[in-house]
Image (cartoon, rainbow, N blue to C red; front, side, top):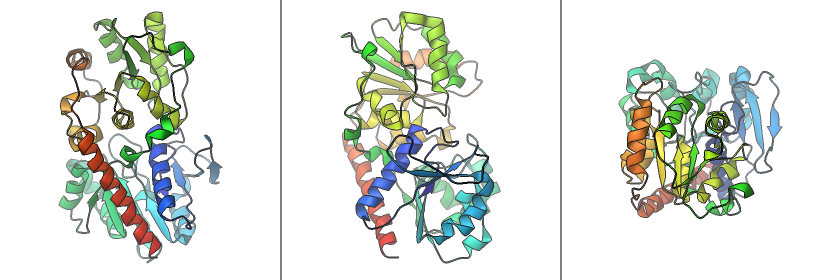
Amino acid sequence: MLGMYGGMWREYNPGCFLTGLKTFDELKQRLPKVDIDVFSIDNHLETEELIKENRFNILDIIFFSRKRQIEFLENELSKYDAIVIGGDIVWGGDDVIEDNDIFFLNSEKFINANQPAVLINSVHSFYEDKNIGTVRGKLLKACERSQYLSVRTRALKERLERIGINKQLHQVPDPVLDFDTNKFKNVSLPDNLKSSGRKNIGISVRSKLTEELIQFLHKTDLSEYDVIFYPFSRQYDNLATVHTIQKIFGNKYHYVEEYSDPIKSFGITKNFDLSITDTMHGVTSAVIQKIPFISIDVEHELTSRKDQLLETLNINKKRNVRLSYGNPNNANILIDEINKLLNEKMEDYEVALNTARQLIKKHFDEMAKIIDSL
């Protein structure tokens, strides 16, 4: 398995990690006699040595540096019978670090080889039509080299088809939508944040939107709720947001003052009556635990994973409040849109979620069948 399962720079983004864990568990369940090694790129790693970690005693991950990715692909990964690539944003774009060549299979030696088998696992990309032409050749090579090709969203499927991908493309929802929520059953809020009997709101927002969040809080009456600020993701520097809000508002609100492991980061959501979050997997955490949510989205509309998640679940996209970095109207948008949604009941998405889960199970069945036939 090859992806960004430890995050983009080994910060263990919860969504990236659970994507890797879900993929490993599902393949291992179907292929119990197959040895599976999990590799994750670390874009900030300076050493060329491999680093094996099991930081949370959940999953062994072997990290490698982007400095040696092509050599690593050609000389080490090529020895495997099959490589399952992604389940995450392996094809870059506007909002992520410059392209990682290993995920484009940008090696003539590897592309021209017959082995190992390559399976593309429900991947995503932030490339839009206006700039996808610059990487068209890489995408074509990656897709053509693959025995199995699956993408996470309809928008990416249609985009690849427009640039000439003729191989069958499977559209598979984010695998974490089928994550076993029993793994979260023992996750609770810290003792000092136990319920006072009032409804509570959990808020986790990236540091780049802190100023807008502060203005929203100054102008929104949340006095009927217990409001809990918590850090979901290190990748988006959520803890800096928590500390800034705490410094300004003090004991008006409540705070979780440290990061958790990825399982606990997901599981904490079940303790909220409403979740306000700006990450894709923050929304996914609320969805799979049946917690009402309001999403804040800074991704481009055409490639927004949250927009397309809501579409998959037949949830009105008004729950996805759209902002853009540097927009002076962001605070007003938050104030207007969130106040409209605070007491609005969500749609019932149980049927759509079950359909998505069946597609995910079928997806892993098909990948396992290909690997088992090698």
